[in-house]
Image (cartoon, rainbow, N blue to C red; front, side, top):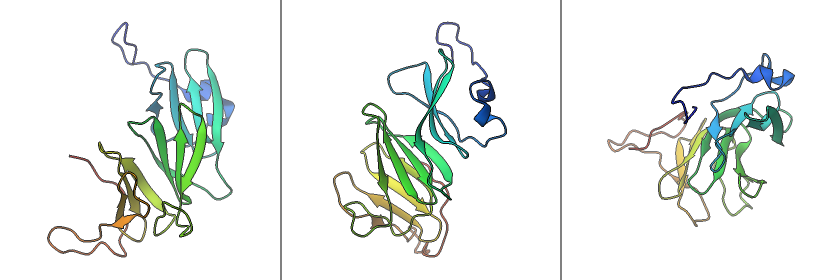
Length: 169
């Protein structure tokens, strides 16, 4: 979106990098402090920073073999959450650091499985994760383990269910 003219620009990211041609890209996320930079998750390449003004692409995280991204979201504390079949990749935009949230029970923040279809942070900083087989989980900001939310208000069980997306009211 061009703020000066009030128009929406259409980008062909294939013009920025040959590797984007024919690639599947997840919806872009804006850089928190630079209007000329967006982030995209490229199925072939990884998490990429695209400088629209200077026309370059930098891969900030390359996927591990077999890793596939599903969803990308941003948090209010300048992090990107990329949901993958190998857990959640967390990219700290301002510090250029990567961390991961996985199903490793030895980690401080752990999930019940690694196949995460969608992960977002709510307004309070809690991370919510939709899993492929174990329903919905959240971790309150500062809490160590993920908490299960596998029952709806009317008692329907989500265990064994894939939750692919959700909305915050």
